[in-house]
Image: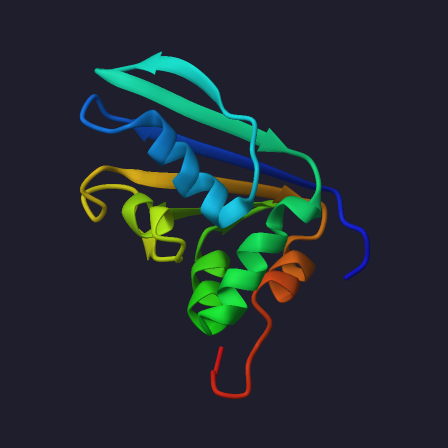
Length: 139
């Protein structure tokens, strides 16, 4: 992949019944070390992070390949593409277990999702790098 200007933003709500460190671990299981900022939000808090390089997506790419879900990911990434920004949601509990499960922003993940926004100067090339077409898929 050519060098792309990439900005990755992650937002995740932490409910009062959750352990903030476990939620942080869920994010790091998918994206590696992130410096998460904490803000008061509703009854709990909101953790946010931002990185400005494609290396922050390396662990995510490796998980997509390991779990052989590139075609599903490719479809979801294109569905979430608006201009130069890709938005998608991950199940927080599955992420804590070190796996990827895409979900809807509301009601599908009992404790709320991890929201991911990726801005890039060439979103199509980024999607092709993150989730290339496979021989067994038709997307």
